[in-house]
Length: 88
Image (cartoon, rainbow, N blue to C red; front, side, top):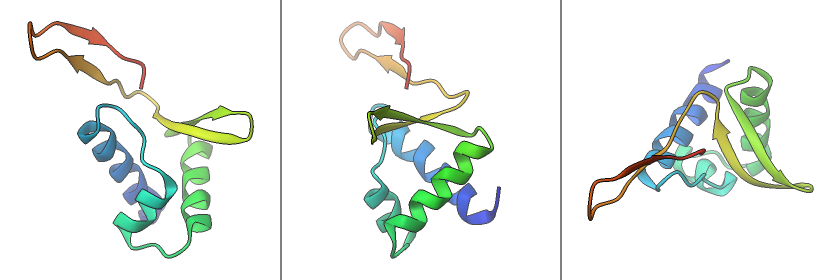
């Protein structure tokens, strides 16, 4: 994995942590990292898929989310501090 792909992975992890497990869009990634082309973001994400760092969650041909392999999102409910494991 090259430096650009590693930066994309770091951003995906940080974004998901800050947004309750939701995935960033390719546009979010491009904007944050100063990448002009969403096609280049797609290329970098494909590199992450190839090295099994992430998996793409799809609905037909559309990417609905990015799952970080080995990552886990934990939902912490503020009222009673109950913790339930999440999948993304």
